[in-house]
Length: 112
Image 1: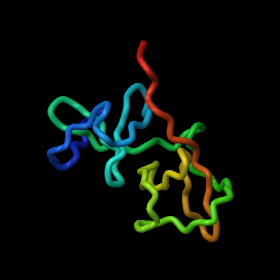
Image 2: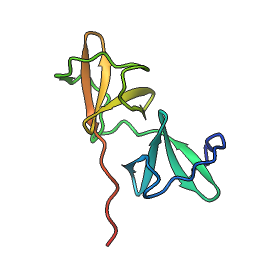
Image 3: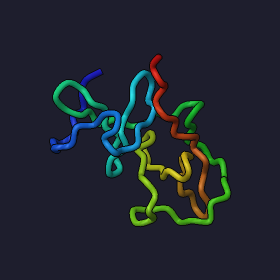
Image 4: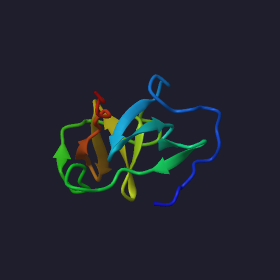
């Protein structure tokens, strides 16, 4: 897979960096200003969560009561070809007059 390098910034992501770590395949991505960054060599790659059976992209209404968007206060998460919002570890996707549940954000596995 070719790198899709994120524009340079001074922050180096890793455990304890202050950004939420999210499990993505066999590695951890870090949620940062609506982006998922994966540390790679001397830069960070731009990632998106795949739409799959664990994080589907289907209409699955969930009780929410909020209207998500850029100013809602919840972290934006790139997912497939759209953006979801993290609400208590779950991915909420605005859809008409409701939100759809698009799975959960899982922390990286602990290496023993």
